[in-house]
Every structure is written in C-alpha cells, then in structure tokens.
Image (cartoon, rainbow over the protein chains, first blue to last red):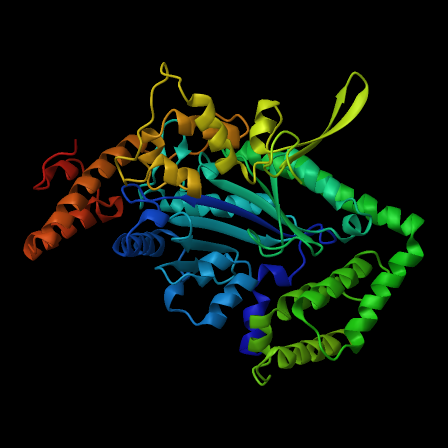
Length: 347
Length: 179
C-alpha cells in the first residue's frame, strides 16, 4: 500500500458506516475554553501560545497516547487543505496564520482543534450513523482532560464560549447527509425550512460558510443551553435525524414510482459522463458522483457505493495532488488528472 | 426579499392562518420577534441584539449592563458587531442584556443543566489566582524584572492541577492565598 492510500484509508469519509444510503458521517463536537485566558479572538499572540502550550501539555499527559500534534501556523498550504478536505478543521481555521494546532488520533476518529473560535474543540467523527459512539469518544476526551485543565465555567451559563450560541453544553451534534432525491423533487427547501423550525443549522459539504447547492448537507443542533447533552443527543438521534432520513427515502421511492425513467436517465448519464470526461472540475465531479452514489444506493447502477464514497474523498484538490504527484500544475492539468483518475476507478 | 414592514431583508417566511385565510408573511428579525415568530437561529445574534437594545432603551428600572467588560475591555457595541465575546467575564459584565440575547438564541434555554467540571469551585479559586499572577507577570516583564518574571512563570505552571495539587499547595506560594 502506498503512503498516500494509507493516509486516505483512515479518513472517516472514505468508508461506509451504518445507514450509508443517506448518512455519510456523524460528528460530535465539544467547545471548551481555558479559565483565566481571554477567548481566542481577543487573546494576544502570547496568550494564544500560552493556550497552545497548556493544552498540548494536558493532551499529551491525559488523553490516549499517539495523538499527532500538528501546528497549522507552520504547515504547508497543501497540508492545511488536506485537513479541510478530511473535515478535521474548518477553512477559517486552516487559512489563518495565528498560533493554532490540531491533535489527531491515528484513526482520525478523534481530533482536537486548539485556538479555533474557542481554545479547544474536541471532535469525534465516524462514518455513517454513529452518534452514540461519537458522543462517547468526545466525552472520553473531555473526562480525560478534566483534571488537567481548568475550563471557563459559569454556574448559570455552563461552559463559556466565545459565541453565546454555543454556551451551556458547548455541544454540536451533526450528520453529513446525502439528499439528492429531495433536491430532485424540489422538496429540499421545505426540509430546510422545517430544519430551521427545529432549531437546526443546515450547511454545505465543508461546514460553516460552504455552499449548499450540491446534494450534501451538514445538519446540526443549534441550541446548547437548557438541556443535558444526553437529551440533545437523543432528540437529534431519535427525532430529527430519522425524520430527515425518512424524507429522503420517501423522495427516492417517489422518484422510483413516478419518475423512474427520468431517475434512471440521470444516474446513467452521470455514470457515462464520469466514464468519458477528459476534464473534470471538482464541483462537477461531486455533482456527478452524487448521482452515481444515488444510483448505487437504489441498485440502479452496478457500482460499489463504497468505491464512490472513497472517490469523493480522493478527487478533492489536495488529495488528488497527493495521489498523483506527477500531475502538472494549473486548472486544466488538475481537471485532466481528476478525469483520468475517475475513469480508471469506475472502469 | 424585503420585510413586509420595513426595508430590511426578511429572514422569516411564514404562512399564517387567520380566520381561515392563509396569508404569506416575510419579516426581518426585529418584526418577527415583535410578531412572536421564531427567528432562524443561524443568524440571530446581531438582529436580536438590535431588538433588545431598542426594547431596553429608557427602562431605568432594570439593572444596567456595563458599557465594556472589566476583564478584557470588549464593549457591548463590539459584541453587537461581531457576535463574539472577549473573555469569560463578559458573561457577567453584560448582564442583563446578554442574558436576553442568549435566551432568544437558545430557544428559551435559561440555564445550563448538563456536564460540569468536577470541582467548579476549586477551578474558580485557581482562575482568580492565575489571573493575579498573570497581571504580576505582565508588569514584571514591562519593568524588565526578568528574575521575578521567571519566578512568577514557575508559580503559574505550578497552579495547573496536573503539576500537583496537594492540600495547602495553592496557598503556600509567595503571592499568598487565593482570594
């Protein structure tokens, strides 16, 4: 196995998990701030370094050994982009040159962002519907750090965060969903409005600030105060998510029943284009792979859904340049390599 | 799309049923709040703040929030602009206005009921002591008293619970007991 493929194998987004037809991945994130320091946006350079030092010491002593510690302010641009593409850090976090770091477990299921909006963001990410194990993993890190760091905590407001929309539990429970049928049936806006009524945030493939014009949506809770973490998790897992998954599955059945020819046409056209294109931009490839993924999930195409899932990771710009270091530089060179890579993978 | 009642962009789009007639309404955050409609939580802070600021004007009976935080100097106006606070002390300094913002943004949640650090009180004592030492450290560095600064830095490191938290240790430093 080449080093590049071994790097990709550990990414949660490269595999299929439970309920893979709709749920791509699950994530639980806890926000914490160090007591006695200003929040990151107000901290001086020295105070940000102090937070880094303190948290690195605490993480290395208290959390399971083997976490890699990456200081992003010294990282090469491609490495930063790679982390964004693997959904380990936000774009904003990757692009800044202020002191900041990512600690990540070898299997990438657990990671810690230091000096993002809050001093610490504990993240647990797994493929498919796996919210309970994500929650357990995030709480495990929180428990391990409890004796090693004093967190900013208020008797009434709970864990204090830079943005008051995270105060209380500081928890974000989210799922990356594949909702192509809801988009095809033009039901997606209704679902987005319903999600707002349920106090959910709906974002694009790369989280906050990314576009939602593709078929991939990251849905997360927005309230963090007044309920326990367990209650928020239970509501998201047992009420919100099943409803969204059911909407998408109903829309797929509706298409199969009423518009089967149109559906088959779209998924086959997507497969044919991917199999023939000589230049493929990333967003175009994602749109086509989304349709092929739908075709695979419904048994309309003889394509392995796991292979499609993996391709979605591999064709991102930084991943592609890692997998095909011989590729030339420039938009056309990248699009050509991507088209070639996809053709080979799906042949 | 503009708000039905003003020139601001509408963020709430609802179908209201009044006496059997369905009416479509498009409202900005402020008018949605006035109409008792939920504002999408993805964009509430700045808009809700405007509403709160208006609703609290001239209300002399209420306790007043400080104009700026005593911990970090961030003003409430800056918070209104950015949506982010400067330090943990902001949460106390900007009451009661911040409390109203939080309750609206948190869909009515008024108090934390979830996980908590094991010894929140001890944490608070350590925080106060650490802040005191950091202030002393800043002034030592400014005054170029490097030996004193090094000693204070050692004391700061010793406060962290993972550096040993034996009884009486905290109060035994040269800076005296925590307040």
